[in-house]
Image (cartoon, rainbow, N blue to C red; front, side):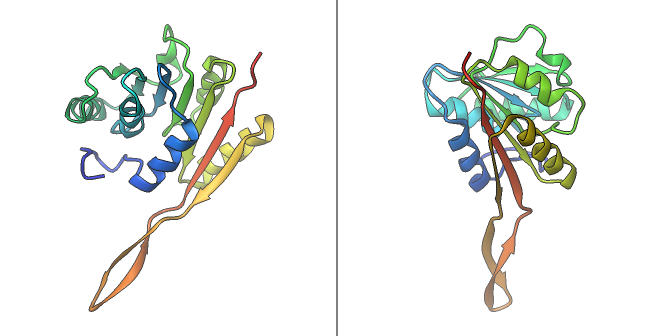
Length: 181
């Protein structure tokens, strides 16, 4: 996690590993990283194989610069950054093989636009921390199937002269494969 410059909008290491496993990058595939934050998912996607590509969509001006710096520092300067609000920012983009939604699952039209843009057989993975985002993912699963997983990660940290578990916020991971035509 310390390799990524961020403002707190970072998919943490253990959650990132599970998220990437659900995305299942394959050589030559394109990922849309929607609500990219600091770009960690898209960057790790590209690092999985030199032919993997990422389009990171981020509306926050400050985070856009962070994504660019992280991509250069972590060896994937070809990451494509699209500045703008989802879903309007999707116009004209190449159809993705996989989509990660790290932010925006409760924003009107984002999930639907992602699903419509996803290639048949493609994977969509969305993470949620808030109850509202979790409810949106539960509703999406009710419509399209897929898997919901809740991960709670705790790290051992000093507590006086002892150690104790310090829990991070639990994360709900929704993953679904779009049926082939």
